[in-house]
Length: 178
Image 1 (cartoon, one colour):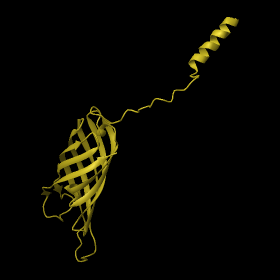
Image 2 (cartoon, one colour):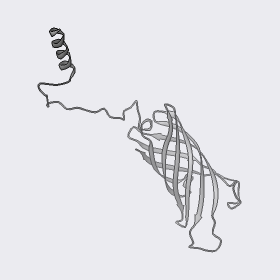
Image 3 (cartoon, one colour):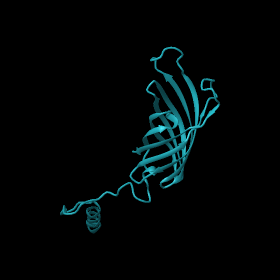
Image 4 (cartoon, helix red, strand yellow):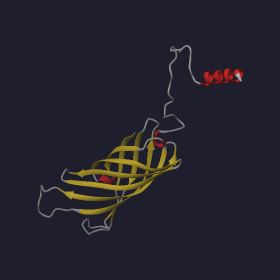
């Protein structure tokens, strides 16, 4: 019985992780979350990008949050705001899907845009809703930089303010994932 007690004590000491000496001459390196096999898009949940034209009309900024992610598909919710001639504000809400792997993605989605004209010219302000489908290409580098080119026609199915049911449009974006 005494030998069994010594054996149990020896096993506990070996498994306890108690060290007699600590070597401080080494450096622990954490693996980077970004490498060539695992681009930023697979790991980062947030994106922010600046748009020229596109869904935010003229110049705008948009924020996206990844909702669902698989190895070849990501579903994102989007909110943004843009302006044209600094007399209009265009808040945008939308959803999009990124289809692809590694760095290159097909982007498809739909936005709703509400325009507001500031009261600089109070006669006949134009406030209206527009639908905005998205079809485009998105490149996300290993460092998390975003480059987008999109075709974003405006659909005036909610009211007759624009004068046409379909207005072809497109845009360019640059941003960052985090």
